[in-house]
Image (cartoon, rainbow, N blue to C red):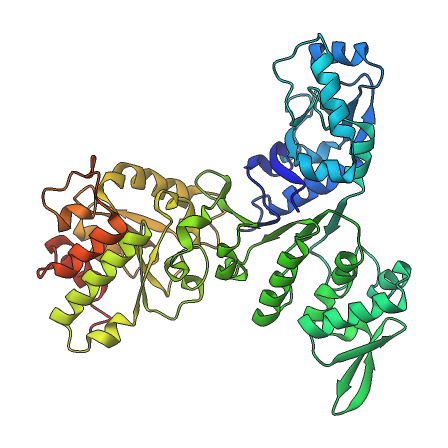
Length: 515
């Protein structure tokens, strides 16, 4: 289910600007500490406090429309000074929101309302070029966020329904849940016997197969054939992480679920099982999760068109959506998630796109066969991954730190851009726990930087890799019948002599591996 289709926020807490387009049923936001992940969830959660009232529109034309129809009103959301970007003075900065809902789902939640709203809009003589389906809100010298223009979603019944449809599951849940003791929180939910059995089944399936029953909110585990009763607080972090969260998700009517760090306290198997559970829940509700752990995202999800993944870009300083279509064919070579973030390879080579990976794999094998007796062993020490083509600058942050020996190899036409991106990445505030990079002007720099504290970014002398395979190739205007995914690696297979520049790169970065 998709309730929210688009969300854009400016100047809220530590979010200067973020825009999430084409939201899906399951939306995953990945990024480092303090990049605004939790703030996005909390802002969506704050929509529970949306209120409907007349006489609020900031736009003068929309205010006239409101005055012409007694059934038309506006909306507002009360915030506090601490909600403003870097706690700045509300008189000097504006919080802005644009949100678009899915008409089909909203019509199911509140039948008939959208049709009436659209009829009103079609009959009015008041014109405003900014009236769209989107809800647009803005603070105007106060801590109150007010509707700027009329929207078909601005209706009392609809706003009330949306405010009841949001469930927020916070991150701090290992010692208590929503500032209550675990047992107290579950007790106050007044679960029926059937609901408790479903709750225990969930814990048994996803966390601990020995959990068999409960008694007065204590868990009963089967140990050596005997019942062993313990309090929830005595359980491991995995159980404590999900025990109350599961109650919220399993027994809620909410259509929007927000979960901060769902992987908290879970082992790798439980992470993947819980992720599949959330994907299944998306049939009935829209889910937003945020995480720092890129390995939490299972590559199998890339094949599901109900999933949207957003990466925090240190370069753009906001969340950017990854085009998962580029990674469906061969997810093992994609540098966004597994396997490179948990790789056992000694050396990582990062190139721009999938077809570049295949070309470099073939050239590397040819090079090793010509220069190493144990070429198979050396080949298995090297991983080659792609950075999603034009998305490469955003994915630098996913490249692991030393002792991994990594190099980024780009086409020559990226030289000017690569130097700027390298500098900007290293200067970004959120780079404390991510890799640093050194731009290489020539081979001397590559020798100096490879295997050191920062990973080298090297740009080829030619504007594109094809120039090394087809000497007459025009990088700026490729032949209309050229298919890089097929023609590139086929040509690489046929050449006998490794291009000199690429061979020299391999010599530098594989010197230790071949020793």
